[in-house]
Length: 186
Image (cartoon, rainbow, N blue to C red; front, side, top):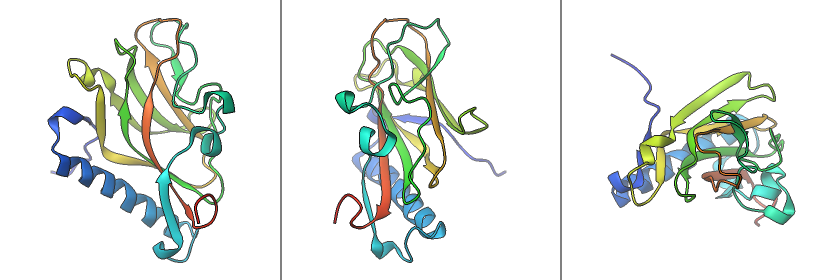
């Protein structure tokens, strides 16, 4: 039997080695994709860094941190994780790899996260049930498979509201940016 497992694994259920392995799988997937997309001729010419909300996804400079817009929409409404930017376009020289999510807003006001591509969400890459993090002291989990976005793809990453708070929801995504050396870091 062959299948692809797409689940969220709560941090508290993982060992330090498990977490390191999830991060390395994400990095390796991103490096390979960057070479395949001809961003650089080899992995030696690439750099891996954590994503910056404003520099990489065009969120507002005032709020250069991971958060949704104010959660005032009805229950079940999908809202972007990029604040005021509904669907940013990834630069032509970058690959983005998402591997983890942390929701420090208590109680967790969202029920799922969906990684989609395209302004109209034409392709769904992955959907993770965030309610699996309820009941844990650390509301954080690693994705069983990293979610990779290619250069110039439209990132349409949304969460579904489950509690209307009238506040921002901190939705911190573990995301690596793979790009040629010198673009941001030498």
